[in-house]
Image (cartoon, rainbow, N blue to C red; front, side):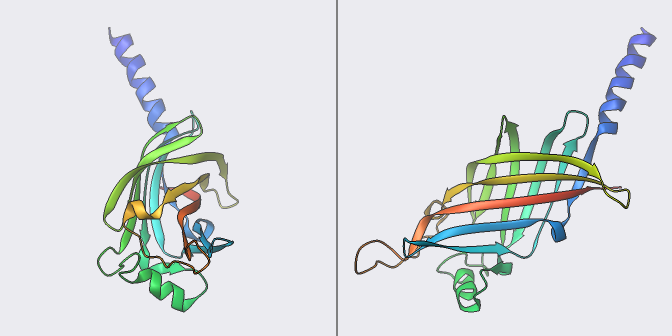
Length: 188
């Protein structure tokens, strides 16, 4: 009986040794998006301020959890006037809804399923998931690289501002393409 308890304790301890919490290294990560403009081209943007952490099991190479927070006021499309409009009540209403959040619920195959909250509205999302593995950097830190991408409909989150074009169509596309690259450093 004691041998069984010792065996179970060893298995549990080994699992803890391989799983770790990683903090997102924002200087080597990116939270970007693209949306159609005038139905013919894309406008790209990103958020300059964000934070997050995730649990990654080094033994199984599996992402176990992820929580991210984006500062809406850090939206950056390389155009100050447009960025100001995106922060306004026409779009994100950053004064009232200063954060976008994502919480992972599960990984299945090459997909990440989670809850995305924008503009105070939470929806289930399915994103493409890429596990880029782990490495020990030149300074002895363990790092993991992950990528999430996908599309969402901005009107599902109450971002409905638009203008009709004389020739038909609209100024701003409904679909938003997300491209998120994360590099995490194992917390010590």
